[in-house]
Length: 173
Image (cartoon, rainbow, N blue to C red):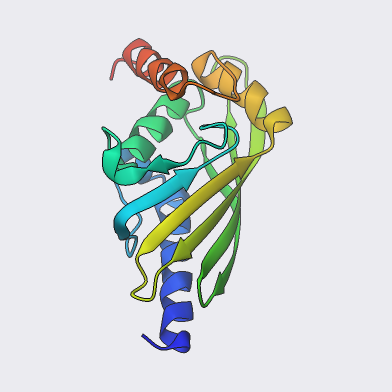
């Protein structure tokens, strides 16, 4: 794949992420079209994995299913939760995304927002080999506490997953 084709692919990948959240389709199981992972692709996040690098081929739930679980759980208390702003910067070896999410609490109308930054690196075939996410804990922590009852950082990923599961059960899912 030549450089121009790779950059175009990376733009489509970033825009697929944007579109899935913009349409609030992730909650219904929509995936990020164009996202394909290399064998043993890595994921890391200071907030979610405390910089532990996860081999995505060894996790028990797919990226798409996890995104759906997360988005559904957030909408239990923030029914309009979704993408408010998106920017991306595609390059020959991947892309960077800056996303602002927001939602309005159904109990009292409080609007909450947070920023998320994603760094995606691909191989020569355009398969994702590393994905890293970063959030501002000063914004995201209070949102999470309100949305699912806990805040990170999460040295143990099961705490976050258990909170999502508990919130989904409370919401009737």
